[in-house]
Length: 167
Image 1 (cartoon, helix red, strand yellow):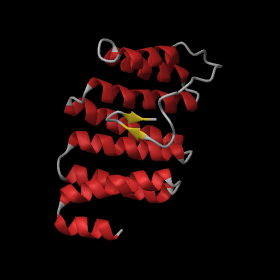
Image 2 (tube, rainbow, N blue to C red):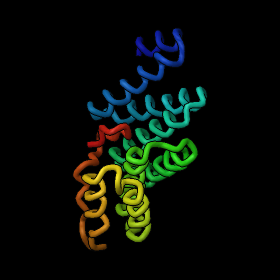
Image 3 (spheres, helix red, strand yellow):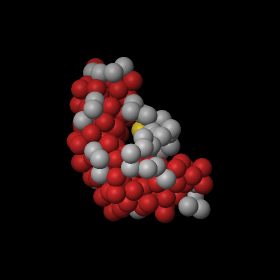
Image 4 (cartoon, helix red, strand yellow):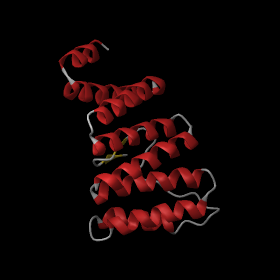
């Protein structure tokens, strides 16, 4: 926390990095409430700086942390907000698709299988021709039967960096 106080004194750029690192460390240590505090502060810092892609990434981290804490419905809301910002910011297709897969996952876990498939279909459309390996993983999700348990091999509950560090 001392590092955060120094970062606040020195400006938003350092504060951003410290909050991101703190959130990641706390989540890895299983201190999800602390991780959530850090990520929510990160969202505020990035939003105040007018950084839409960064805000979307922060919202994704909040959603992932909520999911890890078993708060799937709350996670869904944060992933939806990240999706909206990514649309506005014109995010990279692979990064945006990862958020869409999370949007689908949270709906699947709530029993909303049709909605999950719609999110995954959007993700697949973004991935085709961009990242075929990820597109194949999304195809496998789409092939899951409603009574089945989809395999989320590249989406763990504790790591979700939309910049490629997912699971």
